[in-house]
Image 1 (cartoon, rainbow, N blue to C red):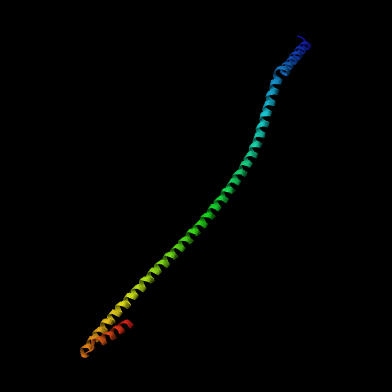
Image 2: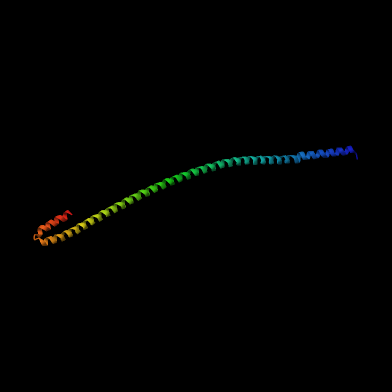
Length: 156
């Protein structure tokens, strides 16, 4: 065998192999690599969009939380105001009830005092009549003494 012919045959085989690789294997391999690179680029872009979306969602969540806190504080303030109104109304009602009870007690005291005065007048009148009877028994003119005792009872 001739070395030159062997080298030529090997060179032609190598050239054929390169041509097969360049025409049949290399284009699909490059297409797969480019497709993979496109998918990776899309994934990175999607990750960036997701990060941006996450940041905006966090901002929205924080804004909603701020609004919720503000509303909660407003509701608490309204509840405090309502509590103060209820307490004031209860105080006013208690004062009115106290004044009513005080007036009723005062009227009852005045009524009792008037009854006691009337009872005392009756007792004084009875004592005056008893004293007058004793006087009348000693003196003859009963009508004059009775008028005098009635006048005395009216004054008391």
